Length: 75
Image (cartoon, rainbow, N blue to C red):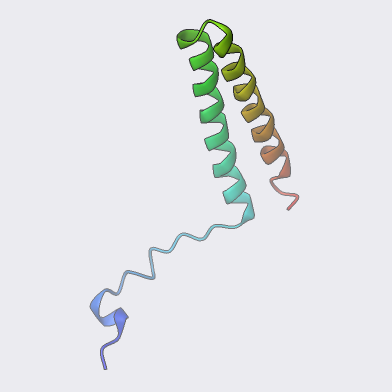
C-alpha cells in the first residue's frame, strides 16, 4: 500500500501552526490595511458626499482592528 508520506514527505512538515493570537494578529493587519485604503479613497477619490461614508467606514475598520489588537493575549 502506498503512503502519502512516501510520495511527498514534506507535505505535513510545512504545516503552519496558528493559534488564536496569530489569527487575531493577521485579522488586525488586514483591518488596518482596509481602513487605510478606505480613508484614502475618501480623501483622494471621493471628495463629495460619498467620501464621508468611505471615511466613516474606514474609521470603523480602525476601531474593530483596535478591538482585535486588545483581544490578543486574552482569548
